[in-house]
Length: 332
Image (cartoon, rainbow, N blue to C red; front, side):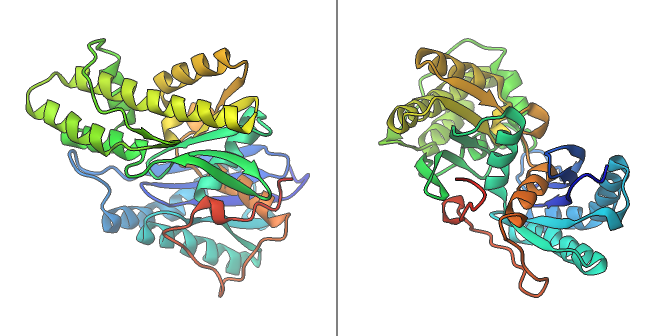
């Protein structure tokens, strides 16, 4: 297996603690995760989520090593999600990464979680210069690469699409993350209820949809109808702003990354739009759409080989770390 550098990536920005082993050729030898499950009707509690991560970190890391069929000493790079994310959760992953770096005397690389989503998506789909629709619990952005950074050509002005879905799920009494549940309920209806459609320039706003959907639930509207309408409205907004960015940037490919990329309906809408524009649509594979160690490990390799690393003493986490402030030295 030792044909190039081997990196372990630790992901711990929110509800997921993940560990993955990836090499310089982009081979993913293991990807193990354990997800904190919030009580029904409630969201992620930072203290409880970080406690969950602390309790299972060693087990997840060990499983990743075992699945990759390597020894700890074969690791060349230690990478971790440095932000953005929930502070206590980020610190668990950073602490584990520091411990590995010290014990093995290996370089330590901080990774921007959002860029991890994008770079893993590009690796797995072979997209080279796409408009990226990054949709998750932490992000809703339309991006294009230019002059050394991923540039934002549209984003949410309030809630992310993942937060919208999870908050409606919790309001209806389901557990977070609620994406799978909401999509299943939506598939059982074709009764469209009008919700606010809010596109401002190339930005989107979901707070009006959330308020109106909650009122519909309170009035006794069928949850299936509410979920169907919520998906149709919010995804149409995303398709509109993505199409506008595609036209403005004169690119010929779109990629969907982030946890909400697992949505079948979102993919269907973007496929229609891309077909009309003669563009190619790529979607990160469902099993890598959500938070995972592979996005951190692969981006850690890219970052390290472009000269990015920190000492244990200098290492850090940032709860707010916008991806458009990160120098992406490995892309031209």
